[in-house]
Length: 341
Length: 59
Image 1: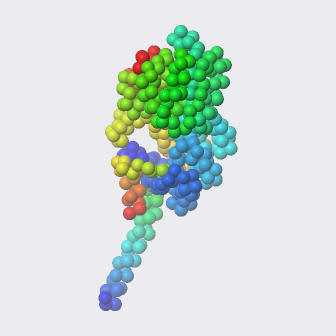
Image 2: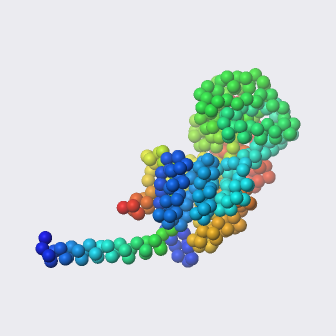
Image 3: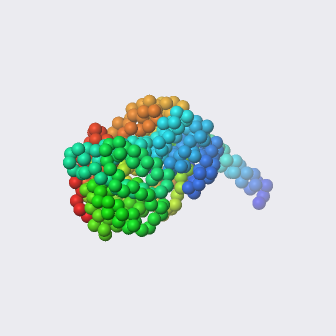
């Protein structure tokens, strides 16, 4: 919003219009959020509505956005049911990739490393015992087995676990080539700490969510080198370079390397769609779904309501969390060997 | 307050009302209104342009 207004506003029909934000606190409560969205549309009569945060909130919001006829850019939502939802609600779009695509990236990465002789076939997998962990580990189990990997350890741990030692000691005892953890940020940090203490050094480590956070590199410094996780970016891309620097200047800290640049890109798409077709929301929805847009992450062109310009696996290499899969995506880096902790 | 003062006060109030009545549609045409329902756990964040816009509007 600041960037748009600093540039004089959005060009609507040849006239620059500054952006005015009407904001309500949804208190992370879906009922409050739905009431707020209705109020924004019917009382405040806003032109466009930005999405709420998280998968659950966006799925709860989808019917009301659709009923009210607003474009719904669900930029922080991640579900395998996205294709069915976008078919049901054509105003709804998804931006982070499907969980199954993220697992495809993991399988692709480790299959290539295995063929290149960098790792063996033994994988240990741990996952938080909630919907996210179960969905991801189920898909990964199937994909890894199909690719010929042997799951030498495969356990879940309770949500909110403080002590990761028991599960990691067992995983270490299985002597895997790779450790994969489908973990939330606090767990990701705790797993790294514990692996260092145990001197648990598989050849490759995939952790996440949370690995892409600048705070991860900030805390673990040289120990972050070679650690993989969900997301990533092409830090050599001009738009990404600008965005990281700009975020530091405006917010006083670095952005994460997954949802943050994609969120910014989604707003660029919304702006460009409005500038092309005006304030008519039905026309904007159509343009978002069919147009091609230049953004900080490169060209964005949705396919069936899904953003396909995503990194599924990233890796800390030096000071940046580079995208390494899909391996055929422009800017993809080759994975590096992870140094021992 | 005399009748004359009352009359002047009423005129002034009407003028202010009229000014806002005329100002409101003009503002609506000049800005693009964006709504956002979002949780705000961290209210110590620096105030950005977007938040200042809202303050102006509410004020």
